[in-house]
Image 1: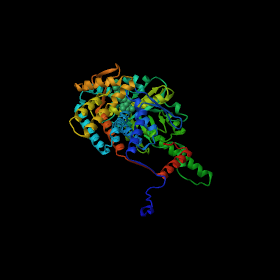
Image 2: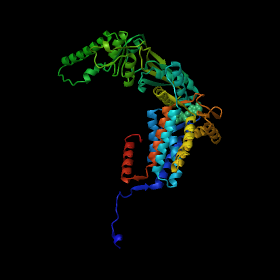
Image 3: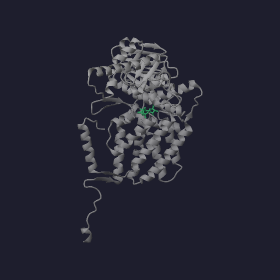
Image 4: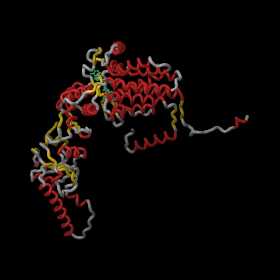
Length: 546
Ligand SMILES: Nc1ncnc2c1ncn2[C@@H]1O[C@H](COP(=O)(O)OP(=O)(O)OP(=O)(O)O)[C@@H](O)[C@H]1O
């Protein structure tokens, strides 16, 4: 009777939902699979795009895995792991975001039967980590390393990787044009290849081919006052003055509190203000600068003053444009007009031109420019936005290739090779490991299989051909998307940076291991209430639920 009177142990708050054990693990895997199913159709040159409408009705059409995953607003805790790997792949490499999610999903799918058969997750994790290491070593072994001594060879290689990266995107029909543009853009950068030194400006209208690269800086004409129209719009070899000063009359008045008790005193203050402004303007003109830019406003008096002296000016220039202009013209941004001489920059040509419906200020022919601007044209806003994302991926891939010169063949070739290698290796080990490494090898085939399915090919047939070819030494054989067959994708120049594939494998395997090692989810009802209340409050305040 004694035990019946023992008080129950209450560990967690009433209403707390705890799910644990095998059932929980399987449910997490199912959630990840469902998430992978939403993006699997976007993989590859024949992949489909997704149209996503957010809470505010903003439409995004994209093929980029990371963009889709971000916009999906996933709430499942295990699903979040996949969103995170897509984001990290995007930040680290810039491409391969769909592949990483797909591969993580494939690993989990292959694990599921083992979990159901009560194999301990740690055993699976151990074998998967071993298989990943073996696969990485194999990539290192087979990757083709190019030396960048010959500039023509270097350029050809870079164009090929940009080409492959774009072949699955909306702009794939113009990939030759854009791959040249991307390589030209990256070759302007310095050895550190800073991404923020490539500006991208979108101008709706026109055709994709009317997009162009400015070796220097281009930005939309800033707001301007009367008097601006009188200023010249083109200079050869002008000195450029970059400022962070407000050149407006009200500036002095607003920056201080002044108490006056008669009209004369007030007049003296107004006069002093004019004098201060004129002195500043005079100094700028005396420095010899022909183009004056400021991060802060340049008012009507100053605009007229400059126009009278044949000087072009523009205020309220965004910070990133200002930084890039400074870099392009080798000048520096000043906060006073004391000694402008050494801080002035110079560009070969400055002009204001019309692009589509916008006026643009262009600084080009800069002697030692390490920055450039891509002006993107094209129909609707959504198309240009997707073009920008695709070019970003291609730029990232070209930068990665420049930093790591090794490439592998795409179109499923490297995955089939790793799969063959691991399957053969698995036969040399005993015990559960053998089955698990073979499962890992099978999961790698998910990429070529999906490429086939998205193109409407018979995946069973093509995968059989590929397995046979790789078994007989056809190292770089992958899917030939044009003929519904297989081909040596290295010869066909379907090249991808080895570092991208390495990152995909590492991230996907690690994500699968993380999901496998979670065997309990505890949902605290209080926390959930807090979260929903916060969300409701945010919603009322006009915030966007994330
Ligand atoms: N011409 C081609 N023939 C065959 N396969 C190709 C070709 N071009 C690209 N691929 C393959 O398509 C896959 C890339 O597809 P996709 O660009 O849609 O996804 P991702 O690079 O993984 O992710 P994302 O571009 O969304 O970041 C790679 O496996 C690549 O090898």
